[in-house]
Length: 386
Ligand SMILES: NC(=O)c1ccc[n+]([C@@H]2O[C@H](COP(=O)([O-])OP(=O)(O)OC[C@H]3O[C@@H](n4cnc5c(N)ncnc54)[C@H](O)[C@@H]3O)[C@@H](O)[C@H]2O)c1
Ligand SMILES: [Fe+2]
Image: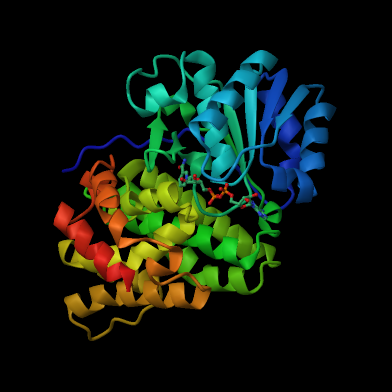
């Protein structure tokens, strides 16, 4: 029997319009000074931004905004946010945006009570000894699941690496899932972030560390994404569809926080750090190639993925049914306009050795269902070049 620890920390507030309760929720956490982390796009274009700030102020709390988080936040950005947050004396942080503002806020909260730079924790030259300051996450993309995971990803472009820093206390205290805030996502962002969530669910479902509770979360996420992602991309104005994608992303987040990821994220992190391929696009592109490599390690589970994605596998052999999952993901990528080959996103064969080296050191590679060697990564990359 597999023994496991399942973490259940984050309160989830779900529904259209629930974000207006932000101020009251901050108060419930005994906050006085709220540090608000977002990006410039959200400040300039989101009608929700002034509403959220007013909600905090109307609850009688002081608020300071940092709005310069870039996609794939760097060490410099995260350290800078942490310093500003310390100077302000915040007792709660609110993250509003996609995975980048959420990860930045979570890491800055950790640095309030732990000395040094985020780089020290990324390189493991320091341990996280003290609990992080509480964080509330309000996701505006449906992809990363960062609102329910205990880690943040830091990008070191010079080293060509993206590395996660984790601690139980970095798990957000509250996730406010208001699908109305996700209506503004353009089709390409909806597709890329939705495929990131699918990738989390699939990698965690076939992970060597999967268990029955994480399986339930992942399978539900795969089904919800299979049923809703095309609709969400085709008509981003439907709040019910957005809500289902938001919950799928959250469920996939719970699943992978528990069971880990695999070679797709290992390779995708290199593509993000080296070529700035958006995280979701990098994952979506690599997903069918890595699934195809992994199928034989867990045919029953890949068959279940095919079924969850709506494939009719009646009468097929186990092997054929399992491979249907790969075909379904390929078709999904095609329909969503995701690049199909590494060439299309500018990857050069001369960079293969760096990609292989960094993939092999990816902390979650051991959870990949099939053992991965350097030669395997090279073969996967060569096939994916097209
Ligand atoms: N901590 C985790 O559990 C976890 C998991 C997966 C990925 N990540 C990290 O998250 C980051 C990616 O996050 P992301 O994919 O959510 O994107 P993002 O936060 O990097 O945002 C990408 C772009 O989308 C825009 N955007 C966000 N919401 C929008 C909306 N509603 N309407 C219009 N535009 C909007 C942003 O302004 C930005 O320009 C990567 O750094 C990745 O490594 C973290
Ligand atoms: Fe991801």
